Amino acid sequence: MNARPASPRPRRRLSALGAAALVALALALPAAPASAATDGAAGTDDVNWTVRTESNNFGSDRTSYGYTIDPGGSVTDGIVVANHGQEPVDLKVYAADGFTSEDGALSLVVAGEESTAVGAWISADEESVTVGPGETASIPFTVSIPDDATPGDYAGGIVTSLTVPDAETGVNVDRRLGIRVDLRVGGELAPSLAVEDLSVSWNGGLNPFAGGDATVTYTLHNTGNAAIAAATAAKVGGVFGLLAVDAPAADAVPELLPGESLTQTVVVPDVPALFALIGSTTVTPLVTDAAGSRSPIAEVSASAVGLAVPWMLLIILALVAAAVVLVLRRRGRTKAEAQEREDARISEAVAQALEEERAKAPVGAAD
Image (cartoon, rainbow, N blue to C red; front, side, top):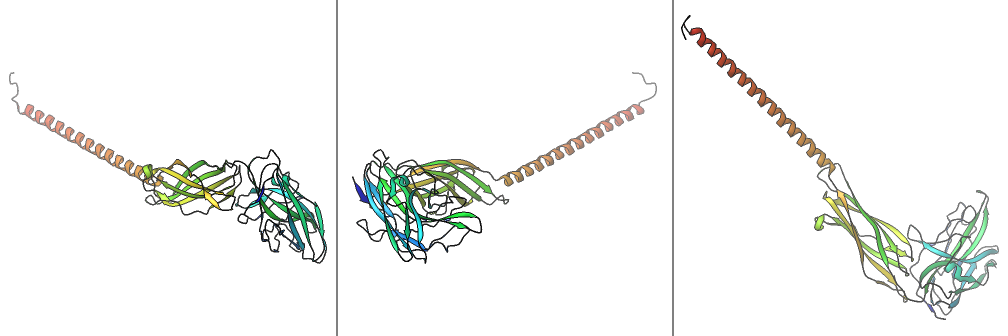
């Protein structure tokens, strides 16, 4: 067995949706007692307990659980529940797999949904516990890694749950408090991040001489077995970097678990109409080591070509060109008509002169 405490990672809010018709979730990450929040229809009156990590050889002031365990290994830890209410509280205790939600927070699979990693590898000594008013209870749990577990990073949570009926909605509300679990299964770590499906578009305004907003969209895909955060930079410009414009500074990409993807959209203002527009991004992946610090690995980048056509300007130019053609054609017709009139006048004058000459000739003159 090789079980090594890992430094806790930055706090993440955990959330999930309901088990019957609705689930109100509250997961407390701080080690100190914390008030619970809910996302259900009912208020917080029924949430009168808090959770914290147990003080042991892993530490006495942890805000989350972090372990590095080799396949086939196991470790025992504990969660402490404190009842601050006036009545006993009956809680279920279980673990659940985690995933990164669209807002970058860590969420847990809903109660009853199958877990295949952290949620399946953690077992509490007690599946339920009753804590009296003003009392605390420590519930041990064991993290057991299968022999054939794939090396890499996993995340989830150890959860305490209270299901109560909601008289207003007529459904059961599952209130949950839990603590995040970060787990690294020992073995070869192969961090890898890919940039996929990058595209760039341009939206110019009505002013034909002003620039427009360019939008760069791409997907970050964690293709390795380590959790990865990232720092990103994007820019757009013309061919050969002509009039390139850097995107505004962006927040760091939240940590993605292995296999997860996250779509990024970056808007770059005041990009001139360059007809052919090249958008690109450079991403620096950040990997958390066993000591809990993040280190960069090799950058990845991608680019794509889009159109930045000043359609209004082209329409104006087309109208001007059409007007010029019409003017030139009219001038040509006017000149041709004038030439025809002049030719007719000359022909008429010549004919008249010949007629006058014939009239002046003597009558009966011989040829």
